View 1 (cartoon, rainbow over the protein chains, first blue to last red):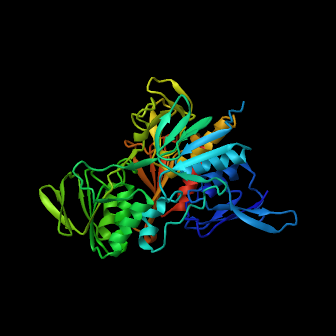
View 2: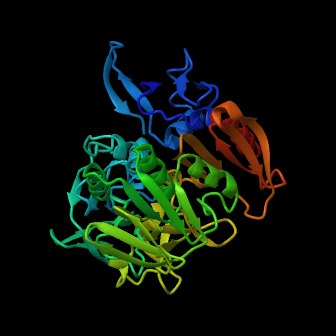
View 3: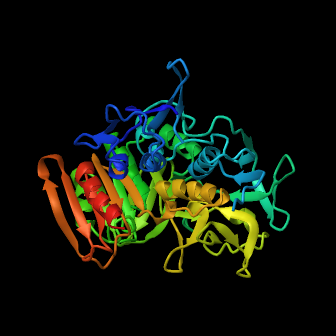
Length: 78
Length: 386
């Protein structure tokens, strides 16, 4: 499983991810979101998947991490 | 029980179909998707077309959310052989599949008295044409229709420095988006940006003399360099006229997205998602949404249906947003038009407010203006209650 991150260039501050999965996302006053430190690997949790699917900007992305732990490629999370 | 087809034909490379593909792959679908779209620019993001795109100079960017491994055939679907589950194309013959997914979206409604060279905004090409007209030196524009798209255009063009006039038969901006609420506030946003408004009036005629347009309302001609029609959208179902499907207002389908024949029976193996789909809701009525979020959910829900489990995607409250005159506007839930609107939060220094509409917890819906945090908290409460 990859690591999730919020693409700041795409996030428009809807704050939907925080509404759906506050245990993984945090927002600022304008609604812009980021992944809470230590929660990068929560991409498999149902609430987080729901948040990924509900992002109107598709801004929550997933980084593939290969066996060596290197960040091999970046793909849009489904 | 899994209902996984081996080969799925999708008509329309939309955000709904992207989500169908992604969610299907996530759930282990190993079959084939064949996607056709007549729009040479597909897939692309529509929401920016009325906003950032018109302010910039860059090209239409291909949508980053499209699954790279799925090619798109550039062809126009001209018919559906319903019993055979085959899509007829204008070129390349026909595509037969185990399942056909209709995702052709909606197109602009044109007024009966509208000359062909009046601009509108739906496709990327429309946006390019509009932007070229603005770059060519237009200094004034009349926008017919003040729904979310018309109002976004007014906002963007006013920001670009054009003198903008908005005309609508409705009594207020974004009447449908707001279910009749916040009319005076939205008018004020327009007026503060210098937009001239005419509400509750019909367009009597649209004429062009030399390079200048005249739009007649209440017996008076309004003049401008550009006229943009934004009176609404209707589902793209013309190509289904011989399909025997019920296309009275979009493709009528069950709560799962299975298309219905005009006879009322289910058309086996035919599905509809996105703006074109009129799905049966909990109260039994068939409802069509023109909504980005709802389209995404339709796609995910159909993938889950194929995978054989009960989807909860469409149990989530509707969510919509728009950007208006420097304001981020969000709506959560079905706004009851008769419900009382109460302002529950305000921060005037940043034009922020949160409104609750509806008196009971069950029917409460929310409108946020520049208040994403408060809005998210409120809608979270709603989600948790359900």
